[in-house]
Image (cartoon, rainbow, N blue to C red):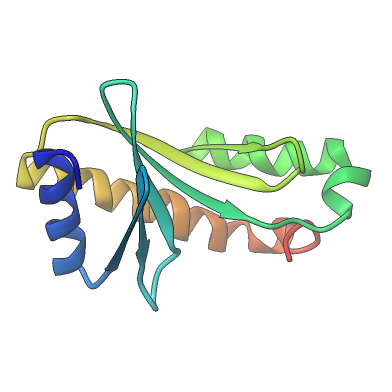
Length: 131
């Protein structure tokens, strides 16, 4: 890991039960009870990103798919949700290059709520679009 903040983030996430898998330029964080995500340096901070593969329905029913993504975004606190060029669902959030235990804990609570809870709450609408 290149940066002290990234080391502190990684330690914090490992304390929360994530396994850290460092790669070239990013780290994958895996947890058996939560969604897996990547953290990478981005614009003076760190981008947290989760990718969900989608079905062909996301491409054929673009209006319906975007309606669900808009609902996710309307209710999110730190995450943003969008479809990439392949129509896969991307959830991401940015965190500054400043580690404070309480601030990062608050960020992770919001990320968990956005990425786990919102997706579960909207699963009935999302399931036809996700693999």
